[in-house]
Image (cartoon, rainbow, N blue to C red):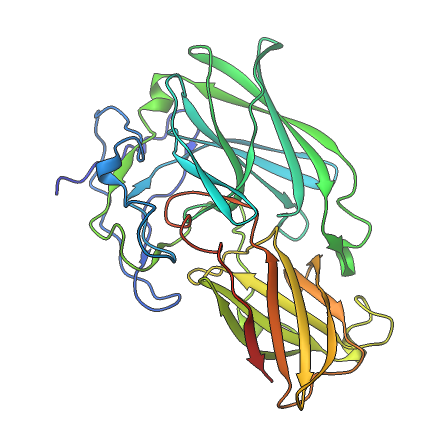
Length: 373
């Protein structure tokens, strides 16, 4: 296969690192990526415009290696209030939107110029804020150019982010006005009382031949195999990863699996759970992808605890953002979970995230998962 080459010159906006590894074996396994073969003047190509280069979404379920790897251009970052944002550019993408447990493909349309992506994080702790609400309008010379929907998205290279395909009005300098509407998740610990204010943050970006020449794709031989590309190295930008189980506070009870999602389940004793509860122990579930520990927000999750065949606890879990646990789903327990108890996790609503290629087959038909303490 003739591999497509990457252009990573130092002119213009910063190009994001492309020397990545593929996650192609067991969970969180890695494989060395092909070396960067150097610059080229080959024109950019959409990674998803040619259906013959993309595994069909009608195949078996689960996460698979996407058919391509791309460069992205980091146009800029800016800060306002509690939020820091970054704006990135890529070639237009086909992606899938999700409503409840149904997916719908969004094809690349004639006139789509660029896939705009944004990420929002806390500049103090470098925690990505997956519960933030985001809108965007693109202007040029103070005139509105476009105001498209920007979706909550999940991709192998970026993890959780906001993105959409946009049409522009020729070459020039544009401003993306990113409106952050506050975080919908409950905030605890040092995050309590933060991220509830709105902010509008402008970020300028250039659209020109030299930028377009740097938006490259490389087709992958491993396309369609079980696994996922490792997230890109983003320099200043934090990665939306869930903590490793060994780094979580409290006691990990076990990990449930549901339609390829990993549901790491733990409890904090009452003495360590005062920021979550009123003197009771705390049950928490950290949901992540099976490879690379990317967080899975926007899910409706409930839990029940059975002891000796009798249900002793049952309720929905609250989406929560905490400096130690990260984004998770949690609730106060009437008493601690004991050895031998069965904790059943039920997904009422799968992650309401649009998906890039490689994730559109997973995290949709989510059966209950049981963890035995």
